Length: 411
Image 1 (cartoon, rainbow, N blue to C red):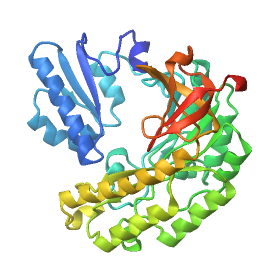
Image 2: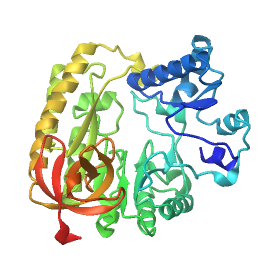
Image 3: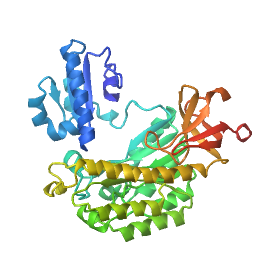
Image 4: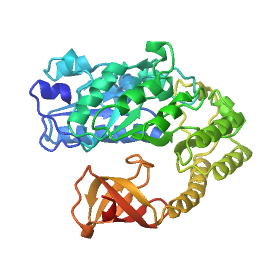
């Protein structure tokens, strides 16, 4: 979008009401994401047939992985582009690819927070994952380049940086010969105007513990860690090729909590992986109950072509996968409800994201947008600006969200 703007071509995110050309960016990670991508493609192909748009182009991971098959199945698409085809896509759109704009973009989030991709691709051998097939080997973006992006974002009003990658803890190995994530986080924390730096997608095996020092030393690095663990059973972790065990995982979680008391830990789990027995699942449930994660999401296993696990028999029925996912989320719901209730009476720093109906909706340091909990503040209490930080006294909670009132004395 930034490249098109620089070429004088107007763009609009997530709307094609008055567009001549629609470019659909797709995901090919798991079945549900692929289904959503295909449904979107079909919707705009119908819009093309109805003369509402002229051209439909498809890019991204689904196109990278399946363009040959999809081109014959959905001939209405005018062209398919892979994950590395930006110059060719721009040429098709009659725009010149401008190297000096690499790293610049138009935000499709509210301006006060932005996702900052610190690397692309993944070198991990996880058996269930197709990302290396679509994104290739791990490739870090330089610290200097990321700091430049952060400065540009901050100058435009961004206050929170959400660091993302397919594997953030591998950052720097290819460029600097060592894991350099802590140095990067420190440099980003020093960017004027950035009040929160939040880390996502930290691989547990080989976790660089100096990251904890960076969080401890810099108040604007959130005491928050998104660390996908995927399972607790040693048999499952071995088959998944995760390079760790339950014992090592427990040791890491203990270290995190000892070094950073009160840290918010978000994780994700996979249920229904090939060969997952009732005993494996029960062990996972017991592990979740024991660890009491602040935030947790569950995926049902998706049998992906050309992955190592595709050679295994996908022998857990769909209904069992769904039942296990629901069971695990019920356990997490109870844990979350208790954790949230313990915050009643506290005054928390809240970033206001939006206004919906009779409430302003914001997040605490413990919450990332879209995937975590929210804080609801009655709009009747006064006008709040989107993107501002406010102090909120928590007065109530439900299973996941908090309800608060403005704490005017704390401004």
